[in-house]
Image 1 (tube, one colour):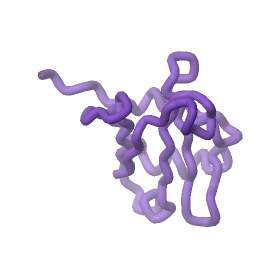
Image 2 (tube, rainbow, N blue to C red):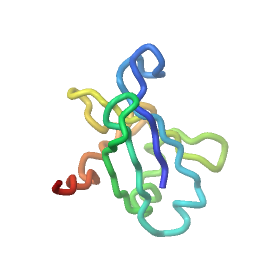
Image 3 (tube, rainbow, N blue to C red):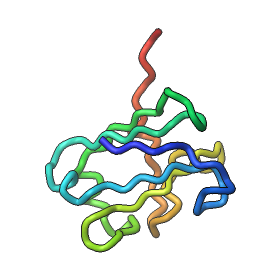
Image 4 (tube, one colour):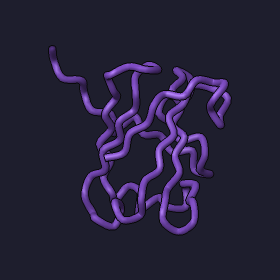
Length: 105
């Protein structure tokens, strides 16, 4: 599981609302699903939950920004315009299809 706070535009590399996540290569090699938790609002205790198959990262590795040899560096947009799109990697991959439905309360 990897989690990120929601960054405000003045503290974000994208200069817009975004989440910054780093996925270790070891998690991808595990061949399972990778759970990404993205804070809904700054300081919130609620999260958007994405469940991404490790295979997705393996199949599209060239589309992501890599730090060294061991981390995928994601900047997922938290704006309506680019919702859950990686703005760092050259492929600009969307992650909307991996968003889990919210549990009923």
